[in-house]
Amino acid sequence: MKFGHVSMVARDTDRLADFYKMVFGCEDTATRWTMSGERISRGIGLANCEIYAAWLSLPGVDGPFLEIFQYKTIEERPTPPVNQPGYGHICFQVDDIRAVMDAVTKAGGEPLGEITDLGTEDAPVLCVYVRDPEGNVVELEQH
Image 1 (cartoon, rainbow, N blue to C red):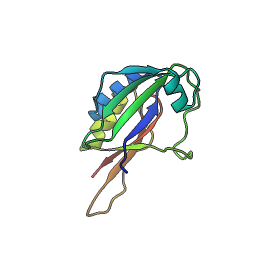
Image 2: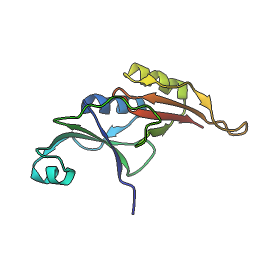
Image 3: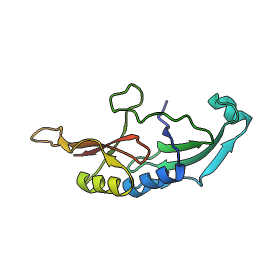
């Protein structure tokens, strides 16, 4: 068994993919495309399904990737709080947490918390939660 990918559903695949490329250095691994048809609908369990997709490499790893889907029809929901059950966040280990926080804000995201040291005196670990432009929670971690 091996881990394959993480998927996000977006209102705007191109905008969200560009955010992850600009801020975190992700790269397209394939040309963005649209999937539809009976097999897609059956596999996902959603009638008349049409999905515009992007696959992005994740920095520093070989294999697992970030998949961003934009469904032709979407079910809106309020932005979940960080403590709501379900998938919580993805985390990027960064070299300069303050610079990445600035990049998040400039690219349309927003901070949730403030940079905090969750490590020890001998091994500091700076952490903070931010939201991407679609409200997904991202943790930034600097060792």
